[in-house]
Each structure stands twice: as structure tokens, then as C-alpha cells.
Amino acid sequence: MRTPRNNDLPRRIVIVYQRLPDKIREYPGLLRSETDSMLTIESRLTTSKPTTAFGKIIADTGYLAIWFIFKNRWYDIGKFYDLSGKWLGYYCDIIQPVPKLLAHQSRTVKLTDLYLDLWISAENEFLILDEDELADAVEKRYLTAKMAKRARDQLNILVGMIRTQEFPPKEITQIGPM
Image 1: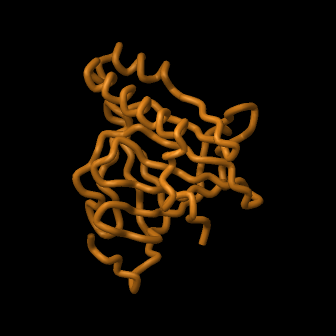
Image 2: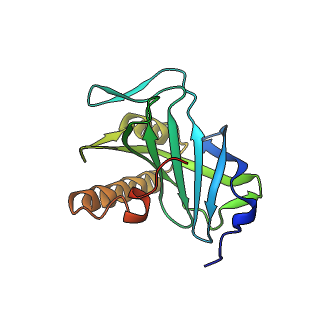
């Protein structure tokens, strides 16, 4: 594992996110830490409308997210905070694994969203999101049925780990805002 170069952190970075077939979104943030296997990026959310789960707003413009992007894993994790700094929970995107994390010092590699998402509240309740979007992506042939099955399988692994209190990883739960 490479030791992070603390002398150039935090630094500005852009998270590059692809929603198949061809929608690319870029999210600015600050790279807080970098190892060979994980990036930690802090950013403010910008949304077109608030996202809710369990009747509460979990994501809105100005909310803080600390993103954990991993090498060779089927997910990323966002640790979300509201405008007052209250921790709300974890947002996990199911993504195609990446063999490297950075395309450049100031940009992540392109992270390909596989549509399924998972919300884990501060009370450790979870909610599977966007199953309809996954079905639509398969129907439109943005994703193969095989890749969609793999995304569902990976999400089910995370759900099992939540139930046994193995997810999210401890190193993630202990990190807070700068």
C-alpha cells in the first residue's frame, strides 16, 4: 500500500461518474486522503430536488458528503451530513469495479453506475433504491442481463453484511468532516 502524500492534501479533485449509456457527471470536491486502495473525498451536494428515505430528506443541495471510492470493489460509499452537520447515514452506489482510482492528480477514473443504490440510515435501517432504473436500463440494453444480475448479487452481499454488522467498514464509520 502506498503511503499517502500528505504534503499535497487536501487538494481539489473531480469525481467523474458515468450513467450508461452516455451521461457523464462531474462532482468537485477535496481529496482528503489517498492510498493505493481508497480515495476519501469531501464534497458539497448539488441536487435538482431533495432525495428522501424513510420520510426524511437524506440529500439536498449544500449537504456534505464524504465519499469513499475503492479500487476493485462493486460499490462506493458516501457518508452524508445535513446543513447543520448532523450525520444522516450512508449512500452506496453499486458501480463497476475500477482497477485504478485516479485518471490524473485532479480527476478520478470514470466510475460507471450500475443503477442500484443502497441507503443505510444512522439508525442502521436500510433501503434499496432504483430497482426500477436498473430494470429500465436492462430493457433499453444499457446493461446486459448478466451485468444487472451481478449488480443485484453485489447489493445482496452488502445487505447481508449490514445484517451481520460487517458493513459499512469500521475505518469508514470513524471518519467525519474536516
